Length: 440
Image (cartoon, rainbow, N blue to C red; front, side, top):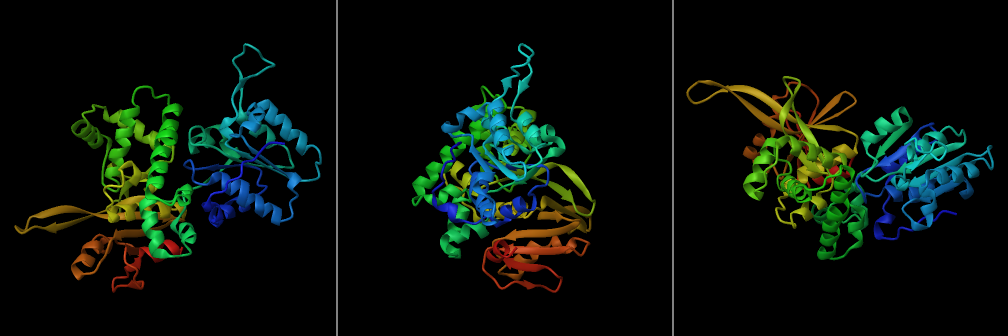
């Protein structure tokens, strides 16, 4: 019987109902459920513990749940696609009147092999062939997780075509994270904006241990994944320098040309902007960073450049900088960006153009920024992130772009302070980061 590793650290007590609900809604839909996301964000626990317990509580017999952790040495046999296929088919055919739930963790450990029936043909058999074959079994419901080195959103589209159903998992949202602190908001917030939401950080008690974990995780796992997936031979140090520059300028407008200039002036490294753009796409593919394009609200069009980059996990960003540059405004902005993605929004940076006259009565055109335009279901939500609006001057400064947007969609200012939510005379909402993150 395949072996399943036990996950014992503290985070495993945290519920992840948002993702569990997605798995439940997709039960027996005839598609391969593919759970993706940055490494160590809790995909395996979601499938092997939370979803497994749900099935058991619903009366599914344990014998009808096939769980295989393919990264375990004891399951090495099933890294051969033919052995995996044979094993699963044997169990599912034992009682065709019962539904079987197939859970395969770290599917990328299944290797491609030569088709033994077509020697010297160069035809390969891999996990894609196995999964597409298994989904034709009427009493089989298939769930897999995969690392970001070989199992990305782009892979699901191209290899599974219309047969894959992706569930994207993120590091812990603050509403999940705070439960590990008995809902002590202040302590949880300080830890969250410092160490981020990768679940394992909660199992370490000291700053040094958390730092070491995040630092080694990036170098030994995330960076290694990117290098191996794209067969990058000579630019490891450049990749490392590039991502640290992104970390130091999170939330700032940038583009490959600007990053190329920074690499040259700060690190004395010359690199073509097109190569930098390619490397940035690699980091995005691996779920390490995300990018927000700029959108002209009045012109209703996207602007090619510059754009903004944010980290999928702020703790990873902070560790890359040695926990220097702890500007809470930029970190808070990154956290809001991630929260919106978790909630299923697509997120852009807004640009509001307006004309006015200078002191000499000359008409000039200016641009104001809206931190985020969150879109979902044909509706927009305009959001500004501000540490505070404790003076009228500061409030008017933060809302200058919002009041110039000529539509009636919701406009919100999120501040650091825990305030009573209120709405001004122009319909702009004000809410504290605590309520924004906890009250979905």
